[in-house]
Image (cartoon, rainbow, N blue to C red; front, side):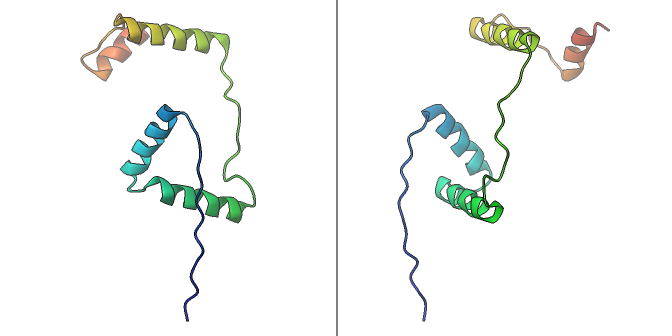
Length: 95
């Protein structure tokens, strides 16, 4: 005799961009969000905690400045374009 598993509903509010990006990745893995959340919860149980170590990303001022500059170039359309990766490295390494 099979026992019915009682199902429960979870509602979560989150940034729409984060959700959309995560769904895109999950879909590329052939997984929907319900399956991913179930996998995550099962890993929480198996690990008796989070299945990863949360950390605050540490970037130095030089990296943060470079990222901000790059973001501005993308927004303004002023960034350099390269025909190939080799061209990019040639420019970056000054060869």
